[in-house]
Image (cartoon, rainbow, N blue to C red; front, side, top):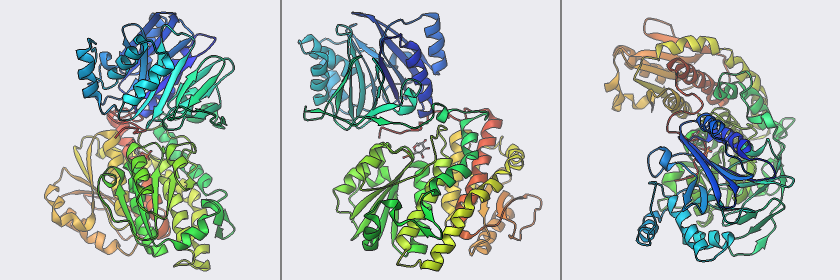
Length: 610
Ligand code: G6P
């Protein structure tokens, strides 16, 4: 979703801002823009529809000199993707802003501003902010006050970077509901939506809190909280390598991230296991006593993370014996719900900034849950900061919009949670030792499955000309089928739906004909015979079956039945193991179709608006 970069430096900033935008591309966007102050009162702007590379060409052709500037990648919410809607927005050559978030009261503000004589040049919600700031400046307020007074009028979410052309020695930033970090340099300071954007220029960051307004000059950074108090926020050093978010030899980030899974899983397990045991302190020192009191679990998440949560429901109920409910955050946050007694509220998120998940957490904190736990991949994210307990997945930066290693490391984290909750309940020492042993074997198993890459690349050819695909699974493989369908639709644009195989006869069977490929995940578990009967129902109606099955599954490859064999493993690990070929399948189909694998159309990596 929208990305922001800004700089006030002692050197030209255009290249820094463009590099920052390139590093934010993964968030998803449709247009880009940059505005640089050449001197007092002299602001130059360039905006383009499409990729940052186009903007860079534009800037190369018409250079933007200057030491202070802001830049933006826009993911359209209000107003079509178009150059005139791209940020930065400018009001009467006086001030310019970039914005991430949604201004909910933009219609009222716009009506009043129109009356007052402002001309609108875009259909964005953002433009009201720049006009409001202008009015404050015109009324004699300085930039800081202008932003503070404007912020008080805004409803909704925003991260803002603002420049006043009459006040070239500072850049002002504000945050409410959308992420923003400040990069600390020597004689230069920066803002950005995340740390990756600024890694080429600094590794030192301040993470703004909700309601903060910051003033950046070359020499210093000052921050005020929402009550107007000058506050000190800690400076944190990021240990991310500059190339942590680079593609290396891989053709796409997604492929790189699929192949990074053995390492990412090993990193997520690292330090959490000791001998045959789960380290009790891995959820924090208070967690063990607290978990002993928990009587129910609620998990809330979005997208791929929601699928991981769905798998966890099976695990937590089956292994820990605790009732577990799972819901998508955008639904959870808008309904009245009954909070079970002594319940643990878990949020699951790669980014830790997903607006709906964050809102659900904030609501849950007011609703009487015993405690909140965030399972997240980003240590400084809002979700992590606002939760009582945290378990970080150590997937490393995930750049491909279609989530892969973030998903499998979430599953690993959820297995650790199942173990922690199950101790003293249904999981005794022997069972714990067995589960820990299985977890330790996981990275190698995943490596084994990755060797199927070539075979799956060939299989992908059968899907390229299809319009629809059905994915089937049963039990904890049903959410894996959902995840497989999501991957395929996200990056290949083939319509894909997942069903619990037992539901076939209640509707989707009507879709089956020779044109309909049906993908089934079929590990050798207690539900196999049931699943096989469901597959027969498909075969009998001419459907083309692609069955992912382990070596023990007695299934013959016949006309219309393709079987892809996976190494056999324990039921517990099956959801992780069967995810990998579905990721590869989606990837190879998308490559064959020639889509933009890492930045699929219309999608964003970090969904910071509702
Ligand atoms: C977007 C991304 C997905 C992700 C979902 C939830 O839709 O494209 O890859 O699964 O958001 O994101 P989160 O960061 O909360 O896991």
